[in-house]
Figure 1 (cartoon, rainbow, N blue to C red):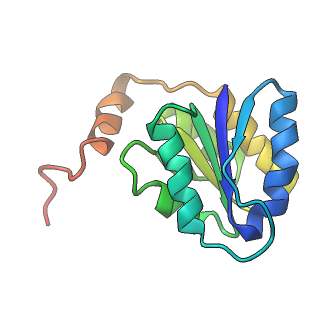
Figure 2 (figure 1 turned 90 degrees about the horizontal axis):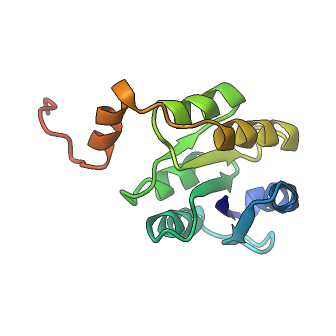
Length: 150
């Protein structure tokens, strides 16, 4: 699978640990930065990750920052990206099976490398169920939603 991975400075070490692990499983990994521990702005890296998903150069994305929150918000600004913040494997599984998420965000300051690997494993192994979930996912790609009271 073609996987794009991006992080800010707070998650640089976690990103560096995950890249060889992903490559060792046969995935093609694109490292979108950052490439060091100097302070950077997570929105830039969330946007780069979403752009890779939008243009088809990546099939899945892994977004990393200190909490995972900011980079997820940034990535989700692109309508082609459905990035779910996860902290354990079950939420990663539901992100795929129910929401057809094409990216996950992880908080490097909140979870360790072992839990990150468990979340990524669940995310990559889980197919989208479609069915009753499909029309909801279709609405996500058609924002703003119609019929929602203001």
